[in-house]
Picture 1 (spheres, rainbow, N blue to C red):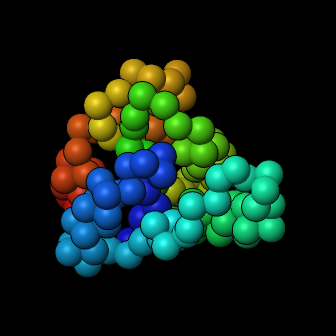
Picture 2: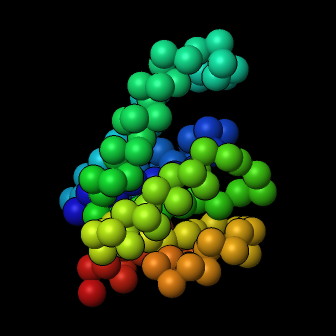
Length: 129
């Protein structure tokens, strides 16, 4: 299965650990945004921002499983969650999970398409059964 993991840029170490857990189970990453370079401020890097936004949206849409790693703040990951929910409504794919510490941060975590779990291991266990 192809996974897309959304999180804020500052959690890239944790995302790398999640990637390793996913790939050790034989799954793929649909778009590895950890390979992107830091491009803030976005308005000073419009061309690369455009490129990365297309890659990431396509990564969400092509995934079988979308995982959002929550945090106290962040912006882009919530756009990606919206893309995942709309993709699920249109195509019944990807399966959407929210993991992490701030599981009550957004009302969209409670959308019928979204499942809340504590860890990536919980997600993997569920999709493998």
